[in-house]
Length: 282
Image 1 (cartoon, one colour):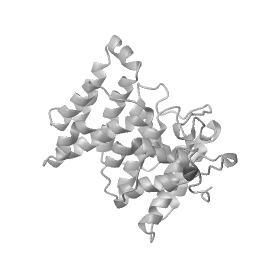
Image 2 (image 1 turned 90 degrees about the horizontal axis):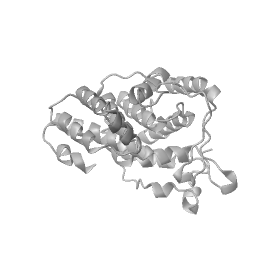
Image 3 (image 1 turned 135 degrees about the vertical axis):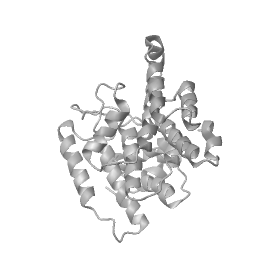
């Protein structure tokens, strides 16, 4: 993240904004343990400096990985995925238009992962489990494959009908956190759900009028994922209950300038303090 620090302090707003886009794009790779290459960082710098456009950066990265031996070597650590998807995240976040719909949500996944995953932009047709660090290798119960499309439509329609009028900011954050947690729990795709949800979240917040800088996603993407996990996990025999507290802390920092301690270790189950948070939010 320190690679673009000088641009964040730059006087030119254009460079500063592009640096923030790239920091967010690169930071979000951490949710899947991915690290972009030095080649991606250098290409990003060229874009920030105004030497190339963000779309040209995508072409350059694509050409770089057309060499079979290079792609095969990078695939061992998924560096190619980190590079390609980082550029696409930056490009999507730079777009001024946004449509609030399941189609738009699915479209984000397609744009991010086309050519990376064979199922880019396709609803999964199989059930999944995923071991989570914060759950000590247990899994959230994701939506059944045969219910994904209907559940997506339901969640978007419910949110579309909801009115934020006359709510204070804490009430807005509480509702917004619930919607994003429910959307993520569907886990509509085989892979890439958290990155897709994060990009959608940023763009939806902007549509609602919030001037979010994306920095919190760049610096706390792993916490964001673990907060989504804890919002959707229940294990009554172990006295672990779903809680929105951590996700609300994340959005409190993003939207209200709060100074909540966003450390993932605070979300690890097995710690009595963490396990008892939010028991009433089932």
